[in-house]
Length: 127
Image (cartoon, rainbow, N blue to C red; front, side, top):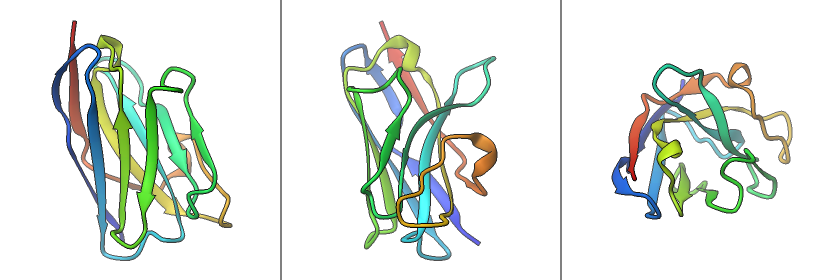
C-alpha cells in the first residue's frame, strides 16, 4: 500500500509561483507512473500533468503547458509540481496520484487509471 501526502499549497497572487510536493510512503514509487490532478469547486477532477517512472516521458494538460513542470526524485520517493505564472483559474485542490506502471515509459492521464491518491492541497490564486 502506498500513502501519498501533498504539501506546498497556499494563497498566491496572479503571476506568482508555487511548488507542490508529493511524498510517498509505504513502498517505493520508483516503478510507478505519477500524476497531478486538480479539482475546482463544483467541477470534476481534471488532469494536470503526468510523468513516467523513469522521468523520461512527461505529459501536460494544454491549460498548464509552458507554465507548470512536473518532476520526480525516486531516491526521495517524491514528485513535484512547479507552478509558474499562476492564474486565478488555477485555483483548485491539487491531488497527487500514483499507480504501478506497466513499463518505464508509461504515463497515465485519466482519473480511473490511478490506484493511489493523496488527500489534496489547496491552491488559491488571487487576481
